[in-house]
Length: 577
Image 1: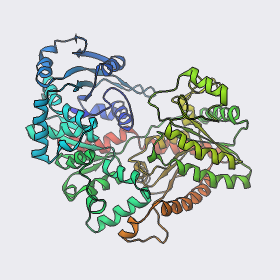
Image 2: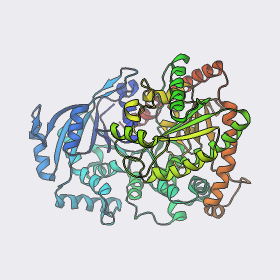
Image 3: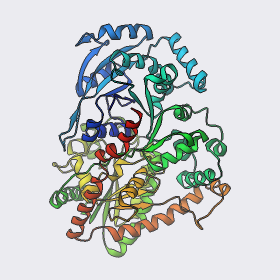
Image 4: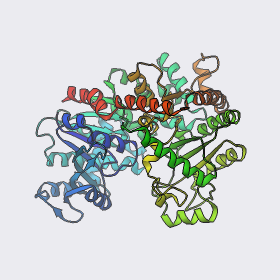
């Protein structure tokens, strides 16, 4: 396989889902066997170079004069011509569980003082060839990746990325599209280009911005496409949104990879042109760990002990949701399901505790701040607005959490708005031997009821530990599960459908009229059904738990990164090479 160039904002640091994908690729034996050379490219400053030094090695850096190998003679002309600074090195990826390790190359380009004349020519090229009007987009998220394109291609030439044949540019989301487009426009034969759709930004914005959310959107999409209509026919002009302009231009790429079945349909919904393009599925991988029932039981005991320390009762079941604090995660749906489950627990006499591990901040609270909150007002059971505690979005959830806890008797909700899952990060009530893997291994049920979820790796992380995973039918991982199981029901996966409409059929106009009231009715009905299903599925004995562990591991093993690379990613790349 020829050189594969990943253009991404997560070249040196995992920020979100793309970083998880890169970690999966570079620690996959199938990927490393199938791709001879990989290069990560992104924007970066001196801080990013320091991160690269911590995570690998820096071979060249114009920031501090590092030059191990005489790279200056290749990079300095590019720096002068484009008004940029460049760093080049390698980043180490390692999977602690398997020992697989790789060291892809990294190119970081600081575009803060880019040459404006050359930049103007790039923007002119984007307009003349692809109709993208850069004058409409006054945002750094757009600007920096347009500035990256020219010097990126020049730097790739400098490291001889194409010496063994045309390299493949993998444009991860909108961030990589300017580089791919400039490569197409300037020397189409020198590169192959692939858009990697980790989401469809146009559709995410519509789903999150409309009160009907997924209940409205996916019903509209199905009915609109049946009538030959596309997103702008139904939802109006999208061109003023810069991500829409860049993602729509993916029709000029050689291929498009989609992380889920809904993402693939959403790409087709962008415009009629996509019907002629090669769109292929490339799901995300799911971690598979082989553990014993004793390992899982130990983690369950730690979680239950933490609940007892914090809530002063030892729950029969521990539920969890590890996620970003974001509208798309649909956290209010967790409370709806928990409330219906609470009512059923009153009849059975069972108890539960739900831990939401989520924060809006970009960095963890300091240890002394957590201890102070714990001592003053029993954090994380109680919270106060403002730093170091609740941010705006966290405070919004806490209002609903307080109401739930005031009314509930059998289940209590705890918001741990802190990175990490250790005593040093989360306070003295947490057992001293607790670590992050315990919340994955020990949970009885992981929630993941998103309104927009292109794939959803986190929702399935407890799978091989025997946890019950609750996802929605719009999550990309639901499609992967269905393909692996042949559509057969598996005990570890519970799929909620918040797009189902009373009476089933609806016209396009009816679907477009769905708002908060209609969605709320659909959510209440489905939450009731899901809660009843949870009660039936929760393991009642040690034998049940062992069956869940084995079934979960068997399923996760068929959804690994090796499977994804071997069966989905590499065949597409091989056809392009």
